[in-house]
Image (tube, rainbow, N blue to C red; front, top):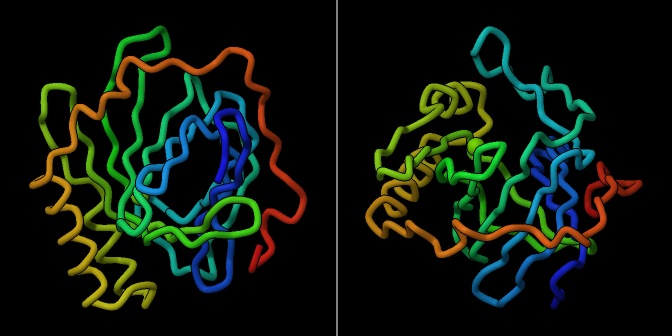
Length: 195
Ligand SMILES: [Mg+2]
């Protein structure tokens, strides 16, 4: 397993295409929870799959190289689960909220792990208010044949499960990154499948 400060590569893969690649730093790695930090200015590959707010068919998606924004984000990933929790902070400190990314359970690779983004997301305010995001994109993905109707039902069910379980706060809300960590690089071959 990994130690704090190790760097790993997290990717979103669909139909053999790498749509998103994030080199991140391991904060804590346990069999039941992977905690990873996306530092600001990290070079990433980012999916461009929308046109005028509507999801495009996969063959029209582009992948852009860019950098992650300030002030970074902390991801909590439970192996075997079909979601990940992402913690966001304000640029100068205060906790901003939790983003629940619905995604496929992770698959280990030589440099980290792969998943598939399942379009649907939840945003949870520190007050506990929940917003369902991108339900339209999930429907459009089904229309494009990216997911089956049955898969979409399972994706929504996982979102409801997270709300029922209510894993907030996570205990990581006051966490801060080690200032000594080096900024990761997007490694060569990040878009090769399999890694
Ligand atoms: Mg998402």
